[in-house]
Length: 352
Image (cartoon, rainbow, N blue to C red; front, side):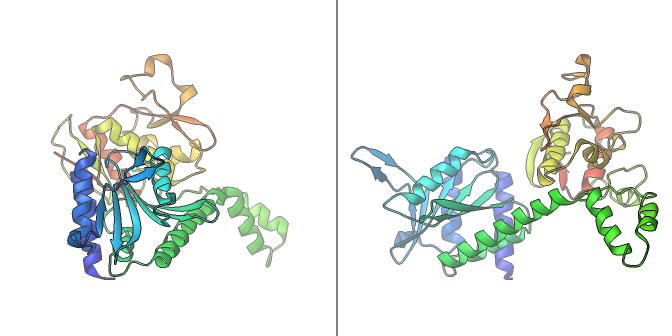
């Protein structure tokens, strides 16, 4: 894999963070420069076609942000939003409308907002495949995007195959995660051992064991040697108004940071139950005896709302369970949580 693709992707990641709250016009200028300076398209040959007017009827019109061209032929379309915005159905619908416009009929589209989204649109059945790529350093999918969407390399079929295969892989991973359970582990162990031992003996032996299915290591920093081997990558120096970034995304102060980490973990682990979540984010992730990190919504008392104990806006798990997150974080206290979140793979930095 070419080092230049890695370097260029990491530049996009760094500038995604740098220009996180900039207006759409600034994002437009950035991506016009990217396509010119990095992807190899030439403005002088009108290969970066910005704000083209697409007419609907005699009066209405649509204006895509960027259409990339080669040898006078439209290749793919790019729709740009502020980096701070989460993907909405309206964003996707807008891009797909452009792709299906009679003057374009393009199969490949790119949506840029908080993440990068690549689309393959099948005009024969009006269905689409979408591949989500977070703006994260050294992201292999992002690096592959830099390669495939380079002017000299771009091919519709190759882009389609990449989007379809990787999006299918992601769906399969999610499906596998939802099927992993204590019951499945016990069944597989039973099937393995009954080839050698009596079934009653196997079942008796397995009764002595409990199985916790979690994607990553337990975050219990009080007993985990792995967690203890990680240190907070910065010093808060007693600062109570520190601002944080998680995986390159500005998230604000201590409370929003904790909530963002937990909410992201839930999104990345569909099917997780409250009990499993509490094992991943135990009370020790804050400070022993300092209350709970996560709690069921219905278990929180009225006087614990607001700035007292818990954030009033719950995180909803896939089973419908509503979970609230602690708001009790101070400079020393937050270090425990950050150390534990590091074990889970979160990259957290601070302005202090």
